[in-house]
Length: 416
Image (tube, rainbow, N blue to C red; front, top):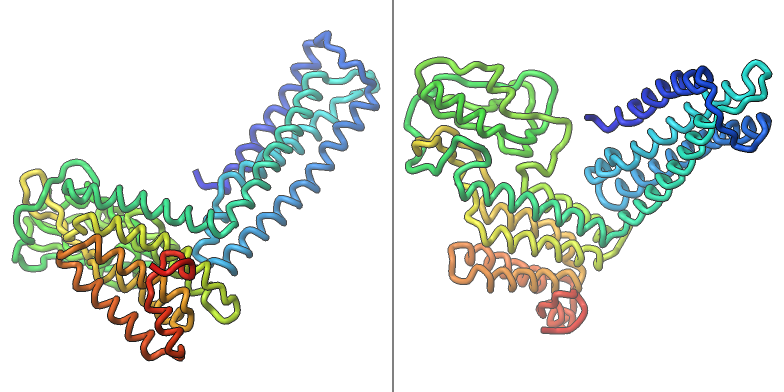
């Protein structure tokens, strides 16, 4: 359910209860006495109803602060975390429900000059008030997530989860049922169908792998996807090509199998958490902020993600059916792509910081030790030499160059 519907559901439920419960209570004439006068009950319910509006305004103010702070300090792409936070919308829903129900209970207090107080409705309104205060407390606790350590850990956790999910599933053949390991390369068949994007621009958010394999298998064809997860599709951009086959694959089904959206997501995209971490690091290295320690903390998470990627066989971009026949081919990043994404911009914008250079060298030395003599060692060594060349041609004096060449996991902590 979209998060913006959450307050609407709370409001609708409270309206139904506000219309039915006081009437049922009035008709049954329950012998419950709260020990307060009708005037006191009206004062309490009126205060609850009016106070909810002020509390709702405070919540909106907090939401705007969270969005602005995350967009300016971290990254505009990271602001979606708070803009779509279910806690915020549940809190708003509870406030709306409290206001609505307290207003309805006010209408039934001292109804017709009877002096009666709807006991159940009054108690429920007070209970909703306490629920609203608890929701407000949880929302204030959410402000702790704006701390840089929590933010970086959140992005890192998202990256670790998607790496384990997507790459571990790739090691088994696919991330869905009905597929196996490819035993041969894609067929050398002619292109029989081309699917182009039609409509407003959108980012590729995920592939429906089981659906694509089933469509290709049903047509006896191979689907070559031209757009990678995270790509922006423009009108007329080629999304995929169908190779070989016995007939035309339904375009509607093909379009449904590639989900597009207004922005990138973590789903099926291990590059995206690295992208966010790099954005935070280079923003911290800008002259307006000048916070290299934040860049070092971002590199801590980046190195951990690269270490996890280094332990996996990165996707080869081929998915097969249960018989081992290649049915889907899609573009995937290789080891050098991940290294470039993780280090290029930080190396460029952090070239004037001894702390960042030391942390970069530490990350690269750690990766070199991890990959050993594998084929990925060459890329790591090339980056290490590039960092050394940047230090050599920097504006540092000789003593600073010597310090910058020392790797240190803390940046400026202790020389290893």
